[in-house]
Amino acid sequence: MASFKKSFESLKGTSHSAAKGVTDTAVQAAQDAVQQVADSSKETANTAAQEAGRQTQAAIGKAADTATDTIKVFGQKLETK
Image (cartoon, rainbow, N blue to C red; front, side, top):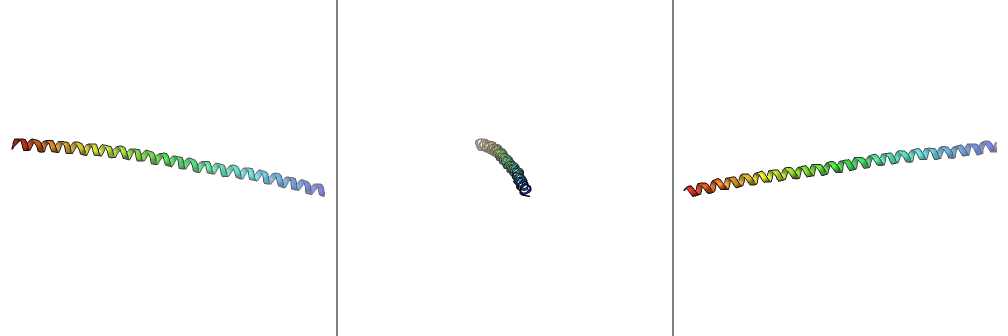
């Protein structure tokens, strides 16, 4: 009976260790997945911010060109008067 109890305790310890190993692995995999999503989201946000900056610069450049053209036309009209 003592041998059976010892074997059962050993099996219980082994099962517990195996379950803990599986749980630890699953937790690590979940943490890795969350980190990958966070990194991907950060990259996406950075890319979107860079693109917004490029579009803003393009819009400012276009507005500046239009203003320059308008001033030139206005100056030419003043010269003809």
